[in-house]
Image (cartoon, rainbow, N blue to C red; front, top):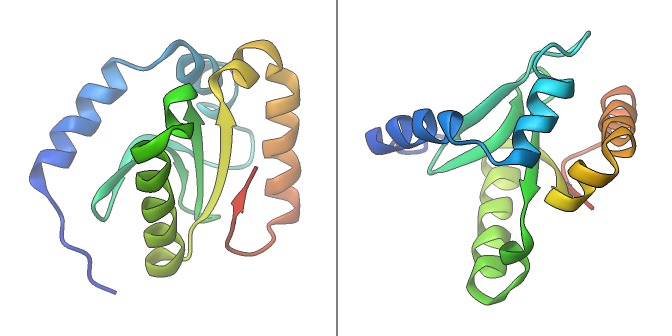
Length: 126
């Protein structure tokens, strides 16, 4: 399916790569950047959205969210975004909280690793 590309997303993604949150930095530099069996990209534009981390081989998005993603409009926007990614690109989504990455890093890495080994269907997990 064709999805329009907004040229400003490429610039915004580049800026987001330079201004990663502490949790995104920890997950990127501590695990995803040099993953032994899968290549991940960070701040990847897909359609009308920018995802935190993307593995093209598995069509997997990993999102690292702060508390604001669970309030009002942000919650609705995330739902719409998830639906778009799943329906239009058959993408699977793993979602973690900043505090999980910062305080339970090994568990987050284990959950990602477990998912990569199972690779089961298009859905939002967690």
